[in-house]
Amino acid sequence: MATSSQSCGVCDVRHINKPSIVWCTKCDEGLCTECQKHHGVSKASRRHEVIPIVEYQKLPTDVRKITQYCSKHDDSFQTYCKKHECPCCSKCVVESHTECRDIVNLDDVIDNAKTSYALSEIEETLVEVAENLQKVRQHLQDNRSNLKGKENGNRKRNKEYQNKDQQPSRQTTRKFDETSL
Image (cartoon, rainbow, N blue to C red; front, side, top):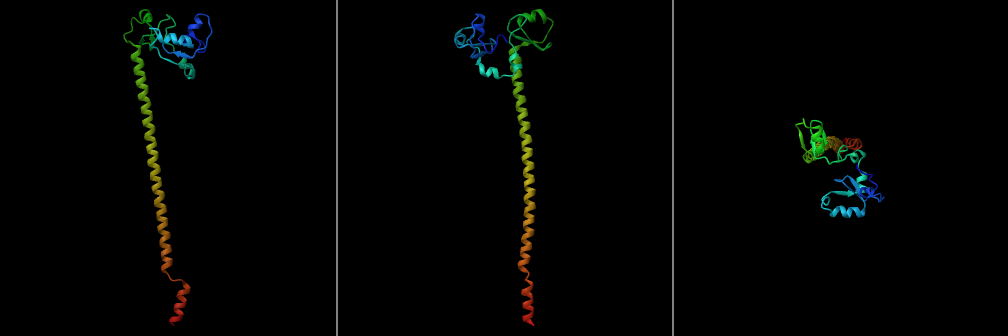
């Protein structure tokens, strides 16, 4: 991180203290309203992505510590050394990575990481969906068992009631027996 996210990096260099309203992810610094306007029209920076400073401040501290510039050479990272697992500026490659064979474009590594992360998220979601489907199946099976149990109980009670209706009461049977004598 080049500057404090609270103050404008460009104004800080000029010894002016103005609050940042956006964060430029490419320049790795905050910009005030005036500097953001110039930044957005300058040929060197008009394609840079900026995010509201409030959104930038919501990022985890570890993410905000990630920089796009080599602290040794004050140059932007352009390549990635797979052997040492580190981003490199052009000067680092010449000075420290001449023997390394797996130097790749940093943008390709970032794109692959994003794709890998997206794939990982999809896999996690599919696992959750499969678990939820299993739970739904189990609940459905439990509900069927409960309904069968209740249905069997209802049938048994219905038979008992039907048997009671078909059997004459004791009083009726006695009266019938007495009159037939």
